[in-house]
Image (cartoon, rainbow, N blue to C red; front, side):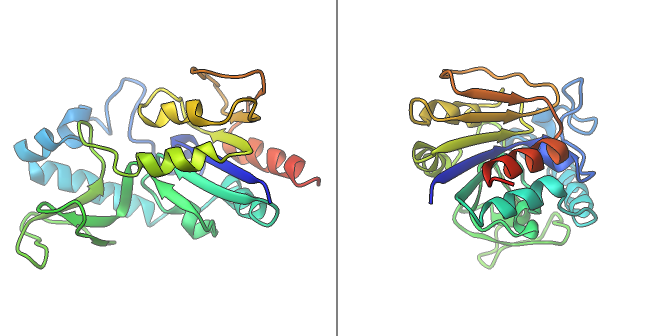
Length: 228
């Protein structure tokens, strides 16, 4: 089987009714990004940050995978599919995708302030005073601005093996995620699905742009790739 690597961003989750964090004016649900998505923001006002992610977590539990997520599951029947997502939701997994790598962390997980390796499932609110087994405050398992992206090397290794690269619902403006496209082999066919496509980087001549939202563009592309 050939390898298909799929890079997904907020656009695919928005189709399920999940709000994207960043508004058109750059604010995250009315907050400056550094207030709610940085170690300094957490240090300055941990209660605000915890409640911000508590609200996102509650919202996630009220939405469902859409036709784009389901189409990628169908693609697995015909190709080795690896999804690398910038999204912190679990909609790919709930749809049934087998191989999902979360570059920016996972909303339904938490971790200890003492160790980046002490990670565990968490579907409830995280409150100030909630502690890990060793007595340290816990926080959302989210990669904040200014923090290392621990799974980046894994994502690069996956992308290097791609026979096809599909990019869905991302501006390709957020680094280091946007740099993954540069690790695809020369002449790898690239499909870019977004209603307002903007793509930058070292591209070859094999770029196909599909100017549709995810729920329209992804099933159409999948049908084409599997010969339906």
